[in-house]
Amino acid sequence: MALSQRLDLRQSQSLVMTPQLQQAIKLLQLSNIELSDFVDREIEQNPLLERDGGPGEGGGDAAGDGGGGDGGERGVVDLAAPEERQPPMTDGRTRDTVEMTASETMGSASDAPLDTDFENVYSDDRFSDGTDGSSDVYGSWQERGGRGGFEDDDSNLEATLSGQKSLRDHLTEQLKIDLPDLGDQLIGLALIDMLDEAGWITGLEIDELAGQLGCEPARVERVLAACQRFDPPGIFARSLKECLAIQLREKNRFDPAMEALLDHLELLAARNLPALMKVCGVDAEDIADMVSEIRKLNPKPALSFDHTPAQLVTPDILMRANPGGGWLIDLNPDTLPRVLVNHRYFARISGTTRNKADKDYITERFQSANWLVKSLHQRATTILKVAGEIIRQQDAFFIHGVSHLKPLILRDIAEAIGMHESTVSRVTTNKFMATPRGVFELKYFFTSAIQGADGQAAHSAEAVRYRIKAMIDAEKPDDVLSDDKIVEILRGEGIDIARRTVAKYREAMRIPSSVQRRRAKMSRM
Figure 1 (cartoon, rainbow, N blue to C red):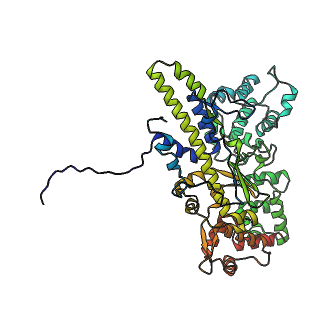
Figure 2 (cartoon, rainbow, N blue to C red):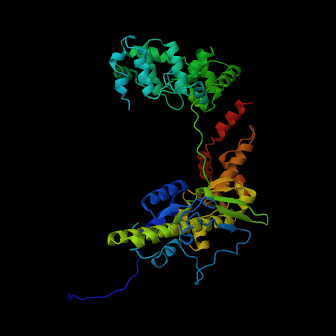
Figure 3 (cartoon, rainbow, N blue to C red):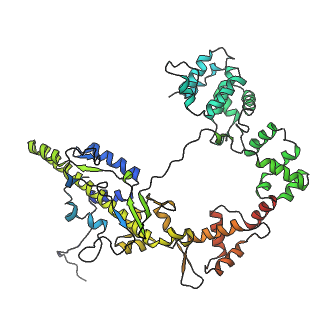
């Protein structure tokens, strides 16, 4: 075969990921907090962008046709009339994000680029049996965030009473009273710093801590034993057994039988009462009293302090029932950045600029601002489309509950609204919807399917898990359902499921086995 050279001319099409297109795709998957931070950075970098204060707050010199953005229009979808959808393109399709961000829609690629040191506090000279002044010791403690006295001239009684006392403050007050020696107090402060959220000291090495503090291990042991008598009972424990033992000693209930029970907590967790009776040397009545006493104890004594308020989820989509039937959805205005392009300012400075570099910069900033506003508007429109279709397909869930949740995948939504699966995946990431049944992440409505017993009907995996939990919650102590029995009941209801799948769902919901549930229910009788 002869080798030769030749020149061919070929035509091909390819999608170029311009910076503008990458930005539009990135905006889809951002949460409302991330989107707000992104817009704030863009406003700082672009003098032609500004926040829209809304009606009555003034919009500056921004022109209305350049505004809107994500917050300029709040879309409302009447789900009672699904036929009244957004008009499709001339070829019958709905524009996808990629199409909406094409060069002819958004412009060409050239339009826009897109403290105190630990060793110093706990130095060896601190352990001179109180030769250092107390102001030095607790002065260092104050620098490290502790409380102390009324040295601050700005302090007042109202300020000290307004806040809730923390666990650190509570323990430090007891430390000053019970351990008057300054060296012991510094050891106690070091132990307080090692407490975890439950109030335990996990991974404590006495010799290692003594070496760091420059004192004898016996002294650390003595201070630790004193701290374990502090309130709340069980604080400064190094294990669950020690935490419970401290509380039992406080109640004068720590006898040899209780000590044997604490040595075999794994039997208590397994509800193996006969084995516990044997190792503790007591009868059934005594073991019942001992278990009841254990249940009254607090394995995490620090949880009553330092309450951190739960971070509430701010929904991106608001859903409510339509009085005429169906559902209405709206984008949450509190999560939408209101951005405007200041056209008047652009016209004023572009007319007075004579330098070519300055003109290019102003033009580039103007095109970038327009691109951001259009991208935000497209993001809002896409979220409404996806959320509206999810509600249409999961209508039974919102009416009847989780037992009627249908199996749903990204492809079902993508085909219904004429978009790509990757676009739907980005839209449903970190987006939450407030519904009459609670706040749900959009990903919640996508569940795998479990085949029906007839080979045709499919059931949502989430609905099946809910059914399994409902059956277990309703079972009686003398009729605990095994996994095989649950499989039999579900198949009688038309759900074809394997025993291992039932066990997997049960373990995922942290429901113990039938043997453990039976022991637990019998022990409560």
